[in-house]
Image: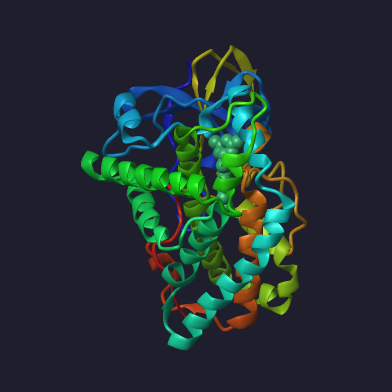
Length: 402
Ligand code: HEM
């Protein structure tokens, strides 16, 4: 790497803007050296073509053994193992990854999703009813964006809803940039031991949920999943499925209310919510720290020579705003013709829960637009407390009235 390494672009001129530095990088150096915490250097990939190429390249491994965020504490591999949290398949490569991916794909069936749809409608209706009954003002994050995906994850896994209070709190600690080692270990061991108890309960009393489905599933190698594997999968589902969707709903609502004409367009034609959701998934990114990857052989990307073992950061936020892919990419347009984006990544690791997430968002925004067209923020968008203290981006609160 001869170019000097630059810091990961994180500063935003506006809560809904992508870091401005990405505009320059995409044009001048879509694959460039980036400084990682701890003095290490990696590659930052910011162009759409280069990000999609890396996501499908056999030279790129999903293994990550480096940090992208400056967090207050990190765990040693021994501490991680001792927490019982488990190693999730998101960081594995085929064929190891394939074993889990096949089993999980078999559980995300059209039948299960169809069965969840009326339940999600009920959940969204009941939260809107409660908000309307309590009357304005409300906090759209606390009253709407957070509870809906947490109920859905419980329904999906077959977990009692009472559990969600704990996993919401623990996910919050795990996602924070500043926490003590004790707080982090406490959250991880707590989540792992509750998940283990839940897995064992489902072994005794199977239900229609995903964990019971996985217990009964027979992998290609004929070896049923162990409790350790089920705990790791359950934890991944909660972390990957709850915080992402909750922040996308919060961020999506903020973007619609901040761009009033977009909200009005959706309220006039809530039946076009599918298109609006796809635009939110392109325009907004809950993962500002990029998708981490490691080169498993020497290869070339965007004219740069990448060496075996190099750290690679895929900036999906930048890729989704690449002018080579979209006209006026920094403009949110809920009527935009949908096109492939990388909001759910691409390739073998592309989001397993994407159809569920889309369904949740379509139901949530469709009903919100129908029920509360007068919805508006009570503070200027610049004053909304954003999650810049978290490893995930979103709004901490959204004070609204109607
Ligand atoms: C709007 C909400 C969501 C967003 C933006 C999102 C985004 C992503 C992204 C970008 C990846 C790829 C990570 C990588 O390649 O390193 C991913 C993977 C994954 N997501 Fe999602 N996700 C969302 C909702 C969900 C939901 C609801 C679930 C499940 C209930 C879920 C489960 C997963 C799993 C299991 C993986 C790992 C797949 C694999 O490694 O094969 N996600 N998600």
